Image (cartoon, rainbow, N blue to C red; front, side, top):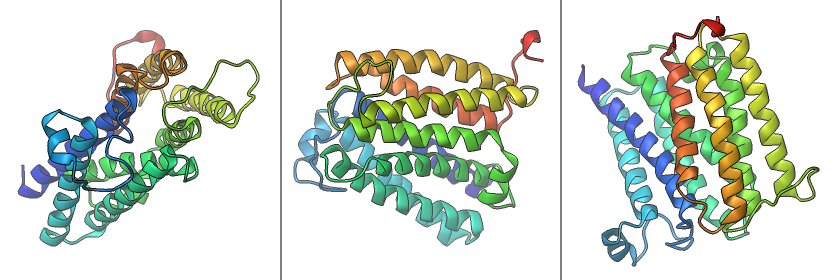
Length: 261
C-alpha cells in the first residue's frame, strides 16, 4: 500500500466515523450541546472529558480537513482537489445545520450536508483504491448511487423538518411538512429498491442491506415519535447500515442467495 492509499484509507474511515457520530449526536440529543458556534467553543474541553459525541464529531471533522489538505499538497489532482472541496463544503454546511436544528435555516441544508458527507467518503475510497478517473465519471457508472443520494437527501431533510427534539408524528396522509418529506423519503427508498433489483446481479448484497435498512428505518421512525428528544441508538444503526450499503455498492459485494439471481 502506498502512503497516499494509506492516508486516503484513513480519510475514508474518518468520513465513516463522522457519519456514524452524527447518528449518535442526533440519536442521543446532543445536536446543540455546543450551541451554534463551530468548530470550537470554550466548553469543549470539559465536554470532551465527558465524551460528548458532538465534540468528537467536530474533532474528527477537523482531522478529516487537515488530512484532505495534506493529500492535496502531497499529490495535486482532480480527485484530491474534489475531496478537499467536499470536506470544506461539508464543514460549512455542518455549521449551518446547527441553525437548521435551532429553526433558523431551511431543512434542505442537513440533506445536502449528508449527501456531501457520503460523497467525501466515496472520493477517498476512489483515491485509496488507485482510481485514475474523477468522482463524476465514477458516479456515471454507479447508477444505484443516484437513488441512494436521493434517499440521503430526503432523509436529511426529514431531520431538518422535524427540527431539534421534535416528533414527526404518526399519519396516514401527510398533514405537516415533516410528514410530507418523510413520505417522499419512503418513496425514494422504494425507488432505490427497484433500482437495486434491476441491477441485482451486480449489487445483490446492497439489495439485502436496503431491505434490512427499511426495517431499521421504520423502527427509527417509531422511536423518533416515541422519544423525539433522544430516539436512541437506532439512529446510529440507521447510519451504519447506510454506510454498509455504500461500501457494498463500491466494492460490489456479493451474497449467495439463489433467489436474487
